Every structure is written in structure tokens, then in C-alpha cells.
Image (cartoon, rainbow, N blue to C red; front, side):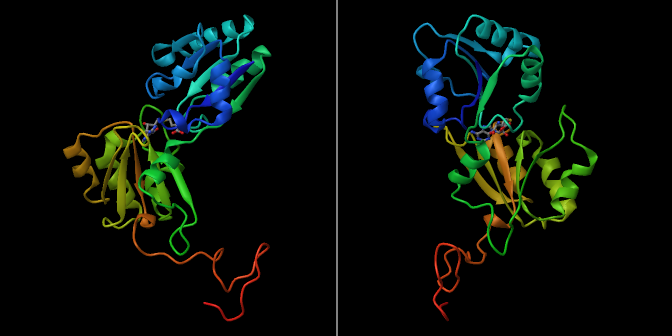
Length: 254
Ligand code: SAH
């Protein structure tokens, strides 16, 4: 069996219990060395074969995984964060399906969750935004024109941008052109949950300069939106006057 496992954002204890148990039983691990914390490999048993996929092609990765499977090893493909986001797992899963090889996916804590934890924020604030947009600046991977950051920014929803820390000027310009005022709060979270985690807070107007001064160009997420501000409405869920399936509200309570 082949397991695609989300390693979590970096801290070795932020992998799921299920993921950690599979690592303990692994006979082969193929991990994305560019982002996965190598400390996670300490959980592998003696004799486990470990391959870093950073310098491999898709065919080489598949060759490794299929070889592990054919030798009857518990074969783990370890991806950073949650594999469903910018993980390039679809192409691997399709090749396994075509080869008739069974596999499972074990989710992980995505870096966008670790970033919110790092800055102690909530993306979905009543009265501010009930929507989180996850996207990226176009790089070598194209972004469909209908999803341009400019058009997404028109919603003024909470936003998290992956893979874009090296293009902050263009990114903030796009968000501003799309509808966010330049004074919209923004943050750059570098290596969330790693020992050298850093948080830069500013606005869409000054975040690029803050990042330049700090020298942060990669392994960081850009967070933008009024959820980083001070104003919001209290939730209905805990409102004393509000009844729901689990609690009856007091008449006239505030
Ligand atoms: N599947 C991963 C994302 C892989 S794409 C996930 O769910 O998090 C790689 C990008 O993710 C990086 O360029 C960076 O933007 C972001 N990233 C990954 N780990 C991060 C971390 N610990 N802190 C901040 N950003 C991170």
C-alpha cells in the first residue's frame, strides 16, 4: 500500500497521529526535502529507505513508490502541510490508478492553519468575512485568467496567498487594484511552526518593504484582509439570547 501523508507545516508534532503511526511502520519514505522537516524522519524505523524527492522527476518519484510497493514495503509519500494544496499529488495518484496500485491519503495540517495559529487570528469573523480565498501569484504555474488576484480581491474576503512571498510588490499591487484599500491589514508568516518562525505585520501598502528589510522571500504565506483588524461582530453561536440545536437562548438577553 502507498500512503500520501500530510507532514504538517513543519513542527514534527503537528503531523496527525495516523500519519505518525504510518511513519513508524514505513519501509520506504519519499519526502519533499525542500519543505518537509527532516526531524519527522526520526520517526521512521531502523532500515527504512528514505529518498528526498527534491531533485527527482515525476517518473523517478513514481519509480521509487512502485518499487517500494512491489517489494511489499509500507511506502510513504510525505508531503508538506496538507497534500491537497499545491502538493502535485493528482498526477501521482492518476499514475497509481492507471497501474492498479492501491493508495490512501492521510490529511495534514496545512501551513495556512499554522499561520493563523502563529498570529492568533480567525479567518472567518462575523461582520468581516465568512469566506477564505486561498490562491497564489502566477509563477511558472499559470493561474486561470478568471482567477486573477485582482478579480478575487474584489470580494474583500479573507485571503491567504501561497508560493508568492518573492513577488510581494506585484501581489500587493494586484490586491489593491482589485479593491482592497492600501491600508488593509496584511501579514507575512515565515516558516509557521518552525523554530525560526517569523511574523511581519503591516498593510498592503508597506508589507513589501517590511519583507525586503527582513529578507523574507520564500517559505512564507501572505495573509490579507480585515480579519487582521480590530473590528468584528460577536458570534451568534455563543450569544446568550440566541437559541440553537444545543442551547436555548434566554429571552431578552444581550
Ligand atoms: N501543501 C502545503 C503547501 C505546499 S506549497 C500546505 O498545505 O501548506 C509551498 C508553499 O507553502 C510555500 O511556498 C509557502 O508559501 C507555503 N508554506 C509551506 N509551509 C509553510 C510554513 N511552515 N510557513 C509558511 N508558509 C509555508
